[in-house]
Length: 632
Image 1 (spheres, rainbow, N blue to C red):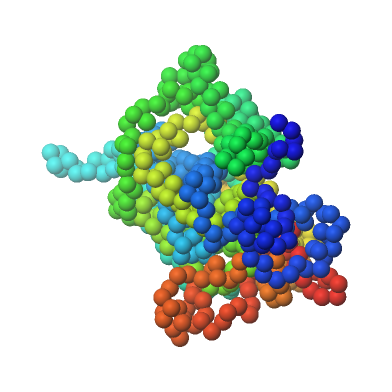
Image 2 (cartoon, rainbow, N blue to C red):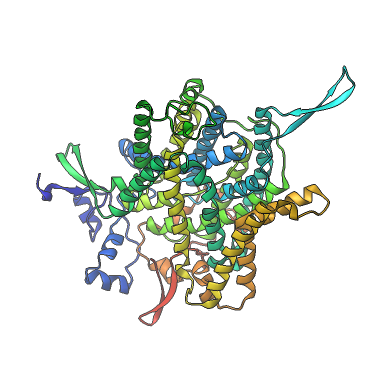
């Protein structure tokens, strides 16, 4: 087949009118407004970046996709982020002393996948109403890792009972199942309270107040410390077999980075063109999943060849590199198991866990808002108005409460990787993400599915975590593009916050007995506060950023808080603000009291006068004598 017969999947050629789109067999997009002068000039010069950006979406947010394509796109989006949810769930299980309880880890993962589906469904239909995937976030795991490092004896618990025959009280080691349930119940109550605060922030419109004091200089060190501090957990998985973990990581790097500009030729058959070849970056979109599968296959081969025969118990390091050591988990798992609130028993509360979750909540809120605006840019729609942002944050908080009730041990947040997939496929249909949510709900209900992923060899998972958290750190650092990095002020604040954020947890871990107030409960809270890296870094960076003199432009606050009003009405959008409007009966949506509800659209306004923008890549610049917003 000649190269002229090949095509690139889901990336149609740029057309200039709806009529030309119909000729190409694409759904005609709506053309709201004109391109700005500087973009038009770059297009005339043949700028390839502008050409790629201007390609219209194949399916817009409000478009209905054919059933067969909906299933294909949904599975693509669902599998894209599965590995992150698996990693977060396993780290929660490790904190709860369930590292060797495979059946419990399977139940915990099923609850996580189920909540991913519920949160995504509510976000797409009721929340911000953009095509967003909501998944388990590492933000809530960092406090658990810090608590585990401080309290190394948390798994050695005792229980007291009264011996009637001797009329004495005796203490014996607690059953391991009771220890696991105790820690999960503690996380449940703490997470539900943090979720309630999360909900209140969105429902009352307090997001705008937060962004007056919290900018990139505060957020970047805070989130970066999460990724850096996860090195201990990543090492624990990878060190089981450095050869397999290094190979898994190398495959992911080669597919996602070295071959990033290569589109894989894929033979397909359609009625219109019969057999032909399409080009699609399949290897890049699914790089981590392909690496996991390849590493898994290598582990199977080594296991069958007898390389790991010496590892026969959980005390042997190579035991978790074997693929046959935990196959019983699949056999023991039920076919169907519906997660429900209170499945792990009564709720408990821990001040230390709550403080860690509260900091994670603030970080998660700001991270999600940034993703809302990034998704709007990718989908070629106006920036989300305040009521949509508030509603999205409220839904995340509500689902965090439900996650706590189910015992997941973590909240959910928006995944940026799925937004990138929308940019690649040019498919932004809301119907696809509704299908994604249903897929994850099925994953959570079908217990056999969760059990299969629990048996992934630890070195394979460790290799995947290396590239996952490496990319996580890189994405966090990219948020500094709106900050003046030539400023000594900003460099000093970021560097000092990172140093103190790493130093204090190390001090608490090495010298835990230094803090002694005479009250064990107060000691535990102080150790948790000082041992939590992202909390120490957040307090330090927020205090310095708001007390050291600096202009809003220098701090990057301007880029996070304002959008040029002209860009809202004259941008190259394929849909308008109607994508953010929730479905309500006409009489209710036009009611006067809607004006006073922060998370509902104002019936008196067609287009909001001011938008709370946190598009991390935007900065105000002068262009041809007027102000505009240039996106990255």
